[in-house]
Each structure stands twice: as structure tokens, then as C-alpha cells.
Length: 312
Ligand SMILES: Cc1ncc(COP(=O)(O)O)c(C=O)c1O
Image 1 (spheres, rainbow, N blue to C red):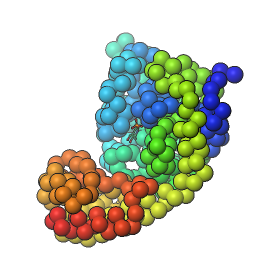
Image 2 (cartoon, rainbow, N blue to C red):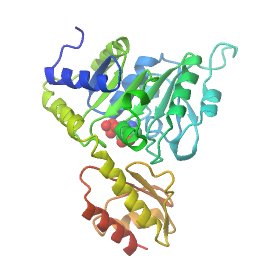
Image 3 (tube, rainbow, N blue to C red):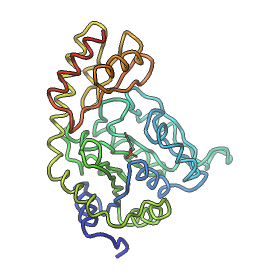
Image 4 (cartoon, protein in one colour):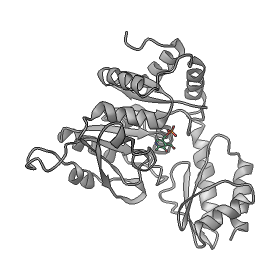
């Protein structure tokens, strides 16, 4: 037995692996570490990963793919954080046939839902991306920080959704609402290798049964609840979209993330909302992002709608 650890952690790992239809899982402190370990496990120094230019792995993980795994990154553009299958085909480079000019593209990283979109990939897209990756001798990793939001929004069985991915990173602390923790899920050999990297990255934790217990609690109690976040997000999006100074693309608003285009500069809107006790973030000069989660009530939504109306 290679994963000698706390029994509650083992329960959590086994439970999530089973839910995702995979052989094994590894509990880690954060989504960032889970992605970093996946990249390290699937690549060799000098390889290249393929990711969206607005993905968390590229934008917000400190360039860990370069420092910790020695990889370059081929960036793909695409509306609402979605990478087209065509762009992935073109982005995978291989040493072979390039007179040694290219690096080896060895890992395609997909984010579902993309944090820069509020939307989700279709099952056909996910399957095709994995097929393309595997046909070019690449692994496919899913950054599923909010994968249960994707599953609830699409009505897809989660094991079916991730079937073709080699690894999946799942966060307990986002849509699911646990205080801390993420898991990397995959086949036994991959997770065995990941265990070694977790040790080196300093993510092996000792008496963390209490954290795993919170993870088990949210798997039991908070999955269906995510639908409430989605309907609150939808209600908020529709109301704000009906105001003169804002617009929301309702067609892509499928999860708990709402992107709002503002006629006025986004920094000004963030400040005006903050003055009314509502915290949102600015994404670019004209867009703000609102994320609905476990702690946001109907009353908070009404207050937020009023705050947007007052900020016009
Ligand atoms: C899509 C995505 N992946 C990974 C992460 C990283 O998670 P953590 O903050 O636990 O490191 C986040 C965090 O917001 C995220 O949105």
C-alpha cells in the first residue's frame, strides 16, 4: 500500500476516485498544487504544455509549469475560455519531423468550466480534445476546480464527463464550499507518481483527517445545492442585463460566474459597489466578474442588484 495516511483522507480519496470513475486520488492542499503535480507527473523538462491563454494554469499559478516542471507553454486563444479542437490540433508540436526545432507537446490542459467564461464545454468537445491529445501521444489533464458546477450545469454524469481525461483536478473549496483542499484523480500508476511529487512539493500533510471529513461532508451535502448558486447567478445576470449601463451574455451564463460589461470603467464600478458593501472583481477595463457561492443568499443577490443600479 503506497498511500499510507489518515483513514479519513483515504476514504475521501477513494470516494472521489469512484465518483469520477477513476482508480485513485490524492488529497493536496490547493488547486494550484494539484495542477502543478499533474503537469510534473505527465511531462519531462523541455516538454511543452498546451493551455488557454486565460487559463488559471497560465495566468495565476506563478509560472509553475516553467519553474517546477521545466516546460514551455503553447497558448491558445478562444472565446469565453474555450479552446477549439482545431486550435489544439495546431498547437501540439512534436520534436519528430521538426529537425529538432520544436519541443515535445506532451500535455493538453483543459479548464471546465473556464474561469474566464462562466460557460462550459460540451461533452463532444471534451471527448474530441482528449482524442486529439491521445492521437498525438499527449496526455489530457482537466483543471476541474469547479467541475461539479460543470456537471450540474450540463446535467452530465461526472464520471462520463471526465472519462477520457488522464487526470482531473477537483477543488473542494470552491463551488462545493469546503474550507480547504483539492484532489488529483487518475489511474493508479499516475497517482503513485503524483504522490512522490506531492512529497517534494511539500504537500504531504499529517493530521488532516478533519479537513478530509469536511471534504466528505461537502460531497454528501453540497453537490445538488450548486444548482441554487446557478439559479441565483442567472437571476442576477438577467436583472443586471436589463439595466442601461451593463450587459451580460446570457447565452453563456451557465454556472455560478457572471461577467458583466460596463459602459463605465470597471474599476469605478468595483469601487462604487465596494462602497455599498459588495465585493466583485475587475477583469479588464470594461468587465467585472461576480461569483456566487455557498454563502451568498437571496438577500445578498437583491442587495447586489440594487448596488449595480445605484452605481449606474
Ligand atoms: C480554474 C482554477 N483552477 C485552479 C485554481 C487554483 O485553486 P487554489 O486557489 O486552491 O490554488 C483556481 C482558483 O481559483 C481556479 O479558478
